[in-house]
Image (cartoon, rainbow, N blue to C red; front, side):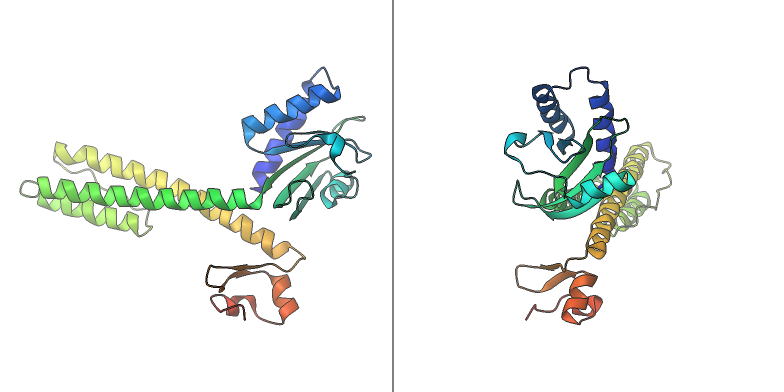
Amino acid sequence: TVRNLEDTGRLVRRVVAASGDRSAPQLQELAGTLERETGVRVTLIATDGRVVADSRRDPAGMDDHGDRPEILAALAEGVGRDRRESRTLGEDSLYLALAPEDPGGMIVRTSRPVKEIAAEVRQLQWGLALAGLIAALGVLLVSIVMARRIGRPIQRITEAAERFAEGDFGHRLEEPEYQETQALAKVLNRMAGLLDERFQTISRQHGELEGVLRSMGEAVIVLDGEGEVLRINRAAGEFLGVDPGAVRGRPLE
């Protein structure tokens, strides 16, 4: 997610640099267009902290951003990151700011609400589960129809599908000698490759989210609907005097 924000920010910076008209109305319209294309909130900020354009709000009503942690870090190091509740939108967000490349340029800041990131991860998880279910049902149907002729190949296909459903996406089917099952084996192998890519994406995003929680100085505790601890970062563990790994799954009380 942080990488996506940084890549989007660099793209926005190039687009803004290539824009001939840098008037406030033109930049405001450009910021809105860029968010519609990328799904990422775009804010253009002068080096003195004044908001020039924002894809979700009128910059005239926004506070001076010169004291924002990501802006200060961007001006000092070239890139700045922060996670906090947005004063403008009122929701927990992840921010990334890039310093201008040329004198007189603007700071480009990209951001996304954390709940949107979490929703995408959940959507990928549901998609993975649904794909595994469809694969299992398809294999079951084929095995019933063609069991008499190609019992052993179908059995191997079924076993492979079960391994896919268990998360073993590195396994690959050998192509059967029967033409009727060759196409199915190819489809399952291709599906396993796609599922593996999606699973790796989910794992990477999960790792990035965990990394954000670990690196935060603020104490963060995530609870489920029953009030039990799902996640607790190091800062929260130190604040409460507990081992974060030992309290997961326990009631907050």
